[in-house]
Image 1 (cartoon, protein in one colour):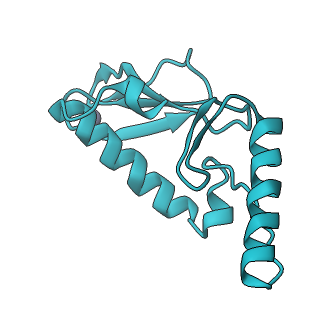
Image 2 (tube, rainbow, N blue to C red):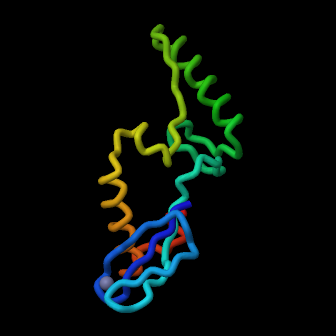
Image 3 (cartoon, rainbow, N blue to C red):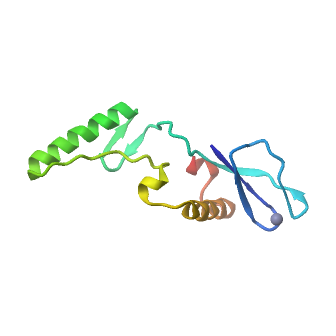
Length: 121
Ligand SMILES: [Zn+2]
């Protein structure tokens, strides 16, 4: 889990893997206000690729296997769909700079009230 801190004065954001540090910016303590799960723990979710709700990793892997087989027999071309961990940003070709930019974007969205910190956990 990464924890984001945002200065209330200048809006600068900082990200640390600890939620118990004392960070100071603009001469005042900067509160923690958002967090990012960069771990690999599985979260039950509705998988858009599969078009179904997946309660655990094994169900998801099975479903990908089934849809791969179906696609292979339907098209006559070997298919092998694999799940990509949405937190495995490198699998999507997203650089650390992109992540930093995205975190900043989220921080701004939270500040403006567009999303809540819970939305991005
Ligand atoms: Zn500041």
